[in-house]
Amino acid sequence: MAIGNIQETLLMYTKQKTQLTNKISDISFNLLNASKQVATEQSRYNSLLSSYYYDYYEDDPEQYEVLVEQAENEHELALAAINSWESELELNKNTYESRLNEISTFESSWTKLLQTNVKNDFSYGGISGQ
Image 1 (cartoon, one colour):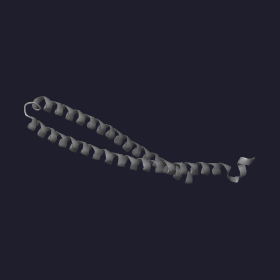
Image 2 (cartoon, rainbow, N blue to C red):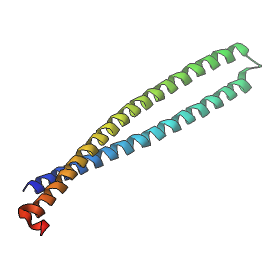
Image 3 (spheres, one colour):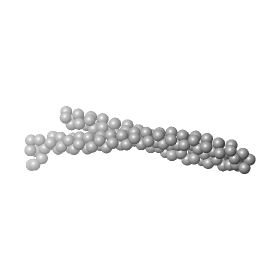
Image 4 (cartoon, rainbow, N blue to C red):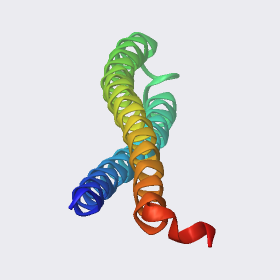
């Protein structure tokens, strides 16, 4: 009966590890998306500055300066939002990885206990030494 309970506990740990691994995978995918968003935002910003340069720099320098400043502010705000999201994702990923390591340690302990119980069940009564 004790072996059955240990096996059930091990199955519970396996299920938890699978759930945590899935969460970590989702977070890793979102981190890749965040990196892509940074690159997309940088590309958008560069294109906008280039457009402003060709459209306003020589004809209306004051308007050019205003537009560039506005674009810089929007760019910094967008990057700050993405960085904030990345930081939150990293924090969650670290939390899940810590929990996964903890569960792996528990699982290892319970596996050793199961092996000991199985060994003791087969060696009970001195049969193994004969």
